[in-house]
Length: 226
Image (cartoon, rainbow, N blue to C red):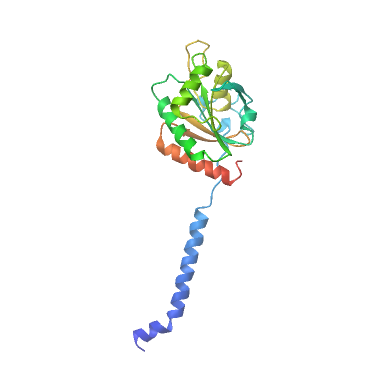
């Protein structure tokens, strides 16, 4: 029997085997690329320097506390504004000339990506509320392309903002010492789910982290935002 005859005799088997290999490869690819749920970040999973000593032991059920702050339009913003929403939070101040402009530009990029997504919003807290009045926030919002329905820049009681940063968002190394000029500052972006749980920490100055954040938003949405 010639080699050609042998090949013809096994032609159908070869086709079947090739198709089977393609199917197996496709199955393996899909299994390896199944979306994994994002972790829930509780205080005892986070670096101790970022967590207030009163909650360092907490291993579950950590949520963003209730809040009441004022946005760039003079509107009161509370946890109910973000009810059933996924949102990205950060801390900034309008006169910052170092990392804040980069962070704000990245928030603007995120805003563009989520502009038509009703499930996702943004929340930026001023850490210099005495300077960042409603009028100052409004001016900054116009300069930076903030769209009111997607992105709130908030000011208010300094103590409340600092407690949120330290005890809710687990985002800063200090809660302030009471000095009028003392100021917390962090490059962290936080991804918050619909249950007000922290689902990710990202460097707001790093473009690669912003891409990961956008991917993680899609993952969170895949699981219904929880």
